Length: 263
Image (cartoon, rainbow, N blue to C red):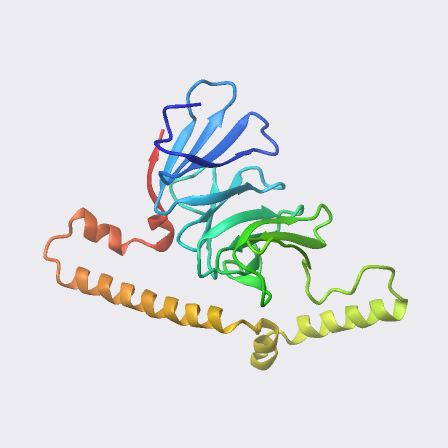
């Protein structure tokens, strides 16, 4: 399939259910869908930021996820590509790889900010990471995958190491559990579920220890976002005519993720 992407193709993934459907992302910020039975592409999106990684939801073949250069993951429904279904934010550097859990309810992302983050695709806290993994010596991530049982995450990084993480950090170690241990785990989860609305409990559950570099990058990112918001407000306030550029500033973040859609 040539003549559509104007530059190098970064990723290509087959749909897990419709085996003839292929999605490919290119350096020109294009996301193109192909049908093996047709010589021409089905549809093409021009994104606001380049997609470094793409992944299909194994349980929802209509959903495709893009990990972008602007530090966020964008979820699309292929039936309506003009507007993303959800934006997932928390990374502080470009996302380089993505992988859905076999259940399709979560996905893991790897970034050059030296962290691995796990996101829920639905339920409480959607759009923000439920957990973040990092180590002192781990460098920029290059790849990440769920194991078939979704119990572990395997990551590869620039420091020439492959690491294995538990997908649930508080889960017990492998092996059979004594009935008393299982009952204790069930009781702890019941307590968290019962008192999760309390501010102190909510803060404890959400708190994660992060390295100084990530904290500094997060503070810098917040300052940049605040400057960008003030610039947009000033531009709209001091513009007499509502031209196309001004109208684009007023739309939401999800609409800004897509520049245009081509049939």
